[in-house]
Amino acid sequence: MTVEELRGAGVGLVELSFVDNVGVTRVKAVPLGRLPTRVGVSPCFEAFGADDVMVAGRYLGGPDGDLRLVPDMSRLVALSAQPGWGWVPADKYLQDGTRFVACQRAFAARQVDALAARGLRVVAAFEHEWILGRAGVDGFVPAFDGPAYGQIRLEQVAAYAAELVADLTAQGLAVEQFHPEYAVAQLELSVAPADPVAAADDAVLTRHTIRSRSLAHGWRATFSPSVDPDGAGSGAHLHLSVHDAAGSLMAGGDGPFGLRAEGEAFLAGVLRELPALVAIGCGHPVSFLRLQPSRWAGIWQAWGHETRETALRLITGSSANAEVKCFDATANPYLLIGAVLAAGLAGVTGELRLPPPVTGDPATGDGAVPRLPSSASEAAAALESSAVLAAALGPELHDAITTVRRAEAERCSGLDAGALTSAVLWRW
Image (cartoon, rainbow, N blue to C red):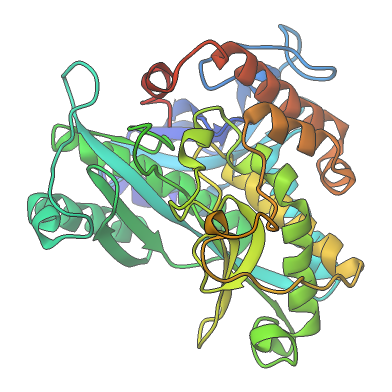
């Protein structure tokens, strides 16, 4: 939308959003008439934890420096569920006009360019799982009940769902499906795939809209991985497909289940880097309350054809794609998509091949299938040792992510599962 179109829609203020290294979306707002503009912001947010505690790394953090948020005006939109407001994602620049080395959105764009140099492109989308609690009450009180995936659940949120889908549609997002999910008071929604940077933008806008529409109904939406430590949690599964000039690399080939050679190599690269990707995609201590066996959370460093217990699930058919199941909304979506692309490209460059696929639940097997990191500290160590992601991220981002993840692990180490869940319930 243009500034003139937003003015006609009654918009007076516009949020410029950016996402920090632990998946929290931060904002600064300006009057509509100031767009396009450059807005000052401290680089300290690269060292923030989900609890807003800052811990400086080797390169980033502390009181020094200043950046400029530069809005991507091609994504400017009026917020349907937040009347009078618009939204636009922003890139981070230095005051002299050069890119900030740790701009996560720019990192994702660089990985897209690196793939394009190999003649490859990716389309991607996130699944969004969230849980609704009642607003204005102490603790968490479910907004609705009923059987998992049940019509009884849908009946209680039908009006809300219709309004939410209308909001997203008005904002240019194509909703592909909506349904009540498995966990307590849990819902799920998917939007159409897009190029990787746009898919990350869409994730930020979708979650923002869900939270805003929920508040209008007297509810609060949380994307936290765990509300009930004894039950299933909420993920943010990433779907992606890889293409070249001839079409999809995930169908029509001679490899496993129709994969073409470069498609198999891409997935093999992602599979190899999954332990390190956990630190980016689900690396907060609360994430590991969700990452438990036999909950379809994808805790195993393995792949399979339509196997929902493996971290990497291949989906065949007319819209063949791969789903990475272990991730959740504690991830910065720009960092996550960029890191997955970097891992996949390394697989293509190395001409990697996939191991045999896994079927069934590895938790009931012979222990041969490796498990992904089971703690935030273990995940941070895997990221620190990943040469592929260190090279792609650069020293500043790589160090900042490992630093904040380790610091979160240390600060949360004295909390039991219930206290941990409560501490971060409304952070995402």
